Image (cartoon, rainbow, N blue to C red; front, side, top):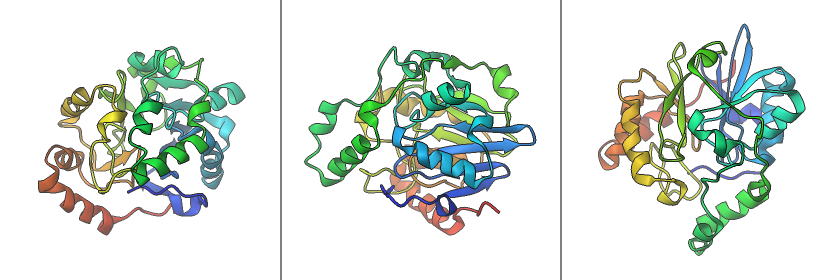
Length: 275
């Protein structure tokens, strides 16, 4: 279960999960920094109010916000695009997303859990707490990244980490995972997660159905990750998973058989420090 905390500290929440790949476990949503000798990129950026944490994580790593070469977005939900408009407007940072997600990120379409869906479940204390956190984190006042652009494979390859976009539609129409092949790491966003404030379990799992544009398609799209070589899995919610991607996906597909083993391995391995 991912906790919603107010005393967020990059010294304890940012970890180097692979060479040059820094995972920030935010108060309720995560982001990743990828850097090499050419500079750095951000992948996702939390809720709007997480901007202060995103900036703190960059400063902790000795990076300047204005130097970001791109902000790469796995999908257009407000808990992943919270700082996209700020970086675009303040620094001219390119905001890149899948072609099928561009209208969502630009604010021309909306594929988000509705307030009605949340209120109908708010009798559950964990849902109520998450709802309050999301509102306080700026979910209802999020600004779209109107200057966002669609990525292409060639452009992505020029960025730090040489990212490769993998289409995993269903959570949103253009949802994607970002593979960092040299690091053997993958940012899966919300294709699946390892925890969430309203989840009672930890380890690889799908988000509750209300968060997906098409829950069935989201589950079926996990087959698009078959055969991908990655041993570090960075989800949009919950802690990093230092297990093979195939094992993590297996936990989602057959949770009763494999999730406990993956959770044990995650606890045993733990994150590495930023060094």
